[in-house]
Length: 100
Image (tube, rainbow, N blue to C red):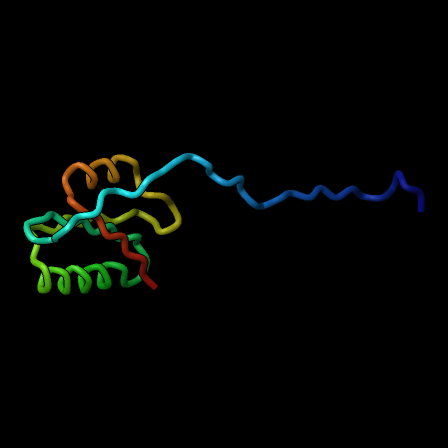
């Protein structure tokens, strides 16, 4: 067999490059009393139930004013930037829930 008849193989590295953008943690709240809590559901099975249970426990333990619920349209896609902006603007803290 001659080398001209050998099929070539192309290898692709499936790993994305690391995102080196700087980030920081949001300031921590000292109490939940009187705060507005955001719940972001990732759309996976039972994520809403998990978040509701967490919210019930936190409310019973610490008390907060309001819960704002949002849900991603799909677990495989990132949350829309405008949803992040909205939750950041109107909530004192946001809890993200992952189901399954």
